[in-house]
Length: 112
Image 1 (tube, rainbow, N blue to C red):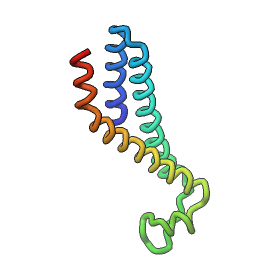
Image 2 (cartoon, helix red, strand yellow):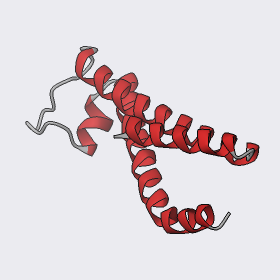
Image 3 (tube, rainbow, N blue to C red):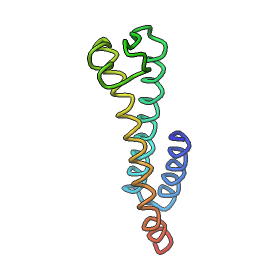
Image 4 (tube, rainbow, N blue to C red):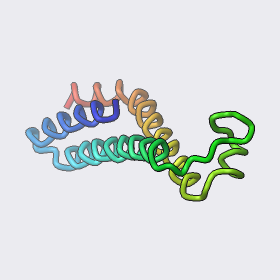
């Protein structure tokens, strides 16, 4: 989904460019880039955690818990696992904040 949202920001950047709105164009491009960075962080972190062979099965039988992550997993696994979820939280906050601004942006575009 992040890649799809980034594509629509590229479309907006193109529209801004055609209108001569350079500042808005760079803002839209940076927005698209941030979606791609977050998508990459989610995908790469998840892929690494599942395929790197660094996961240590939890002693309590759970798939993952906070205590298992902090006490039983190696440091590199802890870091990548946490960053994977930080990227996911960044992407979700992007979606929520974009949704909250959508009406305002639409009005601005209609009356400019």
